[in-house]
Structure formats: structure tokens, C-alpha cells
Length: 313
Ligand SMILES: NC(=O)c1ccc[n+]([C@@H]2O[C@H](COP(=O)([O-])OP(=O)(O)OC[C@H]3O[C@@H](n4cnc5c(N)ncnc54)[C@H](O)[C@@H]3O)[C@@H](O)[C@H]2O)c1
Ligand SMILES: [Zn+2]
Image (cartoon, rainbow, N blue to C red; front, side, top):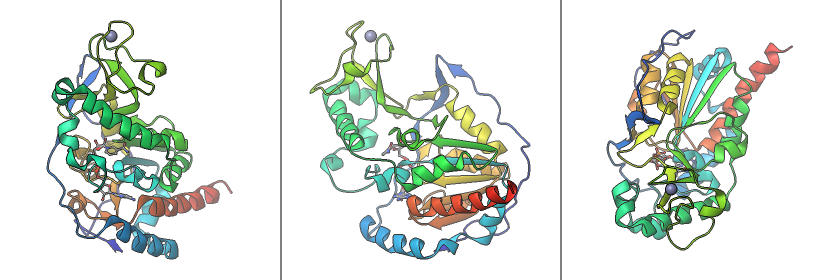
């Protein structure tokens, strides 16, 4: 179940040694743009079937965490976590690469673009309203809760997410670095003002700005757009100073987010991927734990809790 991939002799770094170089801000946005590197191949095994098998294995085998990971976690002063859509999958939020549903005929790579929005804002809003409706009906899962617990178990903890669903905050995580914005907010494409809740409340068509009448758009980062100012830089700093880095539920195809675990590895952190399947990042990890995050992360919390109670006695 646990596969060691990549370098067989990983190096564990003790202290923070290096900070990433500062990157320039461009009008409230980082200079870093969102881009897609490649598409994932679709596995022939149904995800639901895979989860059933993996779920039962992880329920039965908490000792499935490798001794090496248990060891580095026990002494880690700084942990950085990057999450992707997979961490919300067990809440019932579809990932972009999951199959089935109304939106299968539209590719996210085509819809999540400013040009697509200008061409057909109603279609793009329909897609976001569909996703917001799903979010209003789901709750954080055990993976989100485990990450919220982790923040109080290590001296330095940074949670970076590519998700726009706000589920980490709903689970109790503080100061989440949101690389791609948040679906619950929107702003005017003309005057850039953030819209109030009532302006974006259930509507059939594209909502308009109360101040200038411009089109409102979701406050998320679309392909080719700049990341929110400071978010990527904050993530890279945490990646450079952490002892353990967890890459959770991300396919590793959306950049620049996918470069963050690689930066952590180069800086000497022990880098672990948690995902039910191998990804483009797997060969570059110290370890890949093949399992759903809602089952795996609580085991890591158990290790950190044991250490915490040992330290405070
Ligand atoms: N919930 C959300 O906010 C949401 C949902 C869909 C897409 N997105 C956006 O999509 C982009 C796509 O990149 P991505 O890498 O985040 O998602 P992705 O859809 O490309 O990949 C999801 C990954 O999660 C894995 N996965 C599925 N179930 C899992 C589970 N139970 N536990 C752990 N991993 C699981 C899959 O194997 C896959 O590798 C990002 O920019 C993100 O903002 C966000
Ligand atoms: Zn406006």
C-alpha cells in the first residue's frame, strides 16, 4: 500500500535554511500565472471501487504509515501542506478529473478562462452556481478536520490550497493560503469591487455590479491569470522552511502550485504525497501513500498527538 518512489535515500533537513527569492506584485496579483502542464490519464478502475478497497485497508491498518514518516513527523518543527481537489472528494465535491455529471461535456480548462467568460458569461456562471450548490450541501470531511487539528500540534504549520471551496476554513483551519481564490466571493470586472453576498445570491443569469453595472465574476484564478498577490510567495517560503511537506489530493498538473512540493524537496524537506493514485509528481516524492486523504491524514494526526502529549508531560 505504501510505495517508496524516487530517491531511496531521502535527506531530512533539520532547520529552516533558505527562503525563496521575493517575487514582484503586479497590481494586487502575483507575477505568477496559472497554467496547465498536461492532462491526467483516466484510470480504468472506478473511483468508488478503489475507495472501498483503500478505505477498508486504511481502517484496518493504522500502522500503514512508514516508520520513516513516523520518525520525521515526530521531530518536525515545521510542516507545510498543499491540498488539491482530492481532499474535498470524500465530502462529495467532484474533482475536475472525476467522471460523470452534467458538466462532463464542458472541460474546466475551457470554462475557467476569462475569454470564455466574456464569450458566454451565463454559461460560466451556470457552472459556478452548480458548483456552489454542491458546496452548500456538503460538509468538511475527516481529511479537512485532521489538517485543522495539525495546526495546533506543530510549532510552524502552513496550509496551502488550490481549492476554491472554503472547506478548510469551515473545518477550522486558520490562515489558509488560497492560491486560486474562493468561489464564495465575486468581483466586478470593471471597477474590481468585491460584491456583497446579496448581489451574488441565487440568480438565473450573470449578476451585475451595483456600483457601476459591470459584470460580476467569481473571485477565482482562471487559466492564464495572475495568482493573488503574496499567496504563491507565502507558500514557497513555507515550502523552503518546512521539515515535512505533504502534497494531498492534487494531480500535480496545474502550475505554479505543482512546483511547490518540488521546491520543498529541493530545499531538503521530507516530501510525502497522499493520493489514491500515482500522479505526475509521484516520481519526485520521498514517499507516496496510496490512499484517500480522509483515511490517511487522521493517522498522521495520531502520530503528532502522541508526540505532543509526550512533550507536554
Ligand atoms: N474543491 C475544489 O475547490 C475544486 C474542485 C475541482 C477543481 N478545483 C481546481 O482544480 C484545479 C485542479 O487541480 P487539482 O490537482 O486540485 O485537482 P485534480 O482534479 O486535477 O486532481 C485531483 C486529485 O485528487 C486525487 N484524489 C481523488 N480522490 C481523493 C481522495 N479521497 N484523497 C486524496 N486524493 C484524492 C485524484 O487522484 C487526483 O490526483 C485546481 O486549480 C483547483 O483549484 C478545485
Ligand atoms: Zn463595478
